[in-house]
Image 1: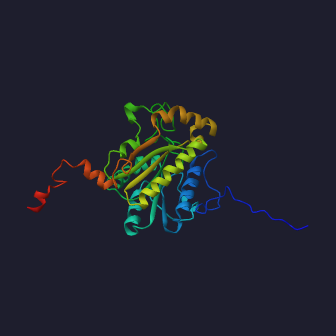
Image 2: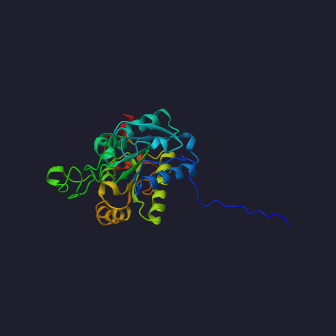
Image 3: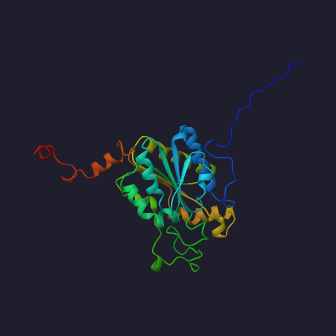
Length: 282
């Protein structure tokens, strides 16, 4: 009897851009999901050989061990500055920073705001789990009012600590920003939406549209003191009302070629910014 062979179709496998290693993330942490989505996008775009990722300090501090593309370790909060340098020296490379909320919105806030307002053509993947994860669960700039953390055992007191930083809302006011979206990864549908957003952010950079950032509202079961399923429930009940999902800026969808064109239009009534033809000839 002739031996028959069947062609096997691979329907699910590890992305090539994600190395076959054990990560350091806690059980139930969503970093692993987001790492995979970034790697899938790199694979689909075929840019692994010219992609440079920036790993800062935080739970993603060892991301250089997880991705197959070139990676650089940055000092705490300095990922946007390092990404800016790489992109300016190698403008045809794809450069992304992968940052947590303490890193991006606290010690790195100046770098974040200025890279965005300069319109640096980089992509930032921002993990917002409302707490400092790696260092033991301290209050972060994104910790919610009344949220209990290691450094706010009675809850975040806004009269003393101020209110949380809403990063997408903040950056949406800056002229150099081309694309901002807030997503989550708590369900299969949410994961698919998050991947679309990450893909769009990378596409925005490749097309030289300007600065792009995807904020992923995430969980931290370990420091929240919850099981993974309880953490997702807490996130939906408390974080999503405070950090609504959606697109916060998309200059292309608004009809502009890039962030610079959109910025010029917003300043069209300022003669210093947009000189008249008569003035320019004088």
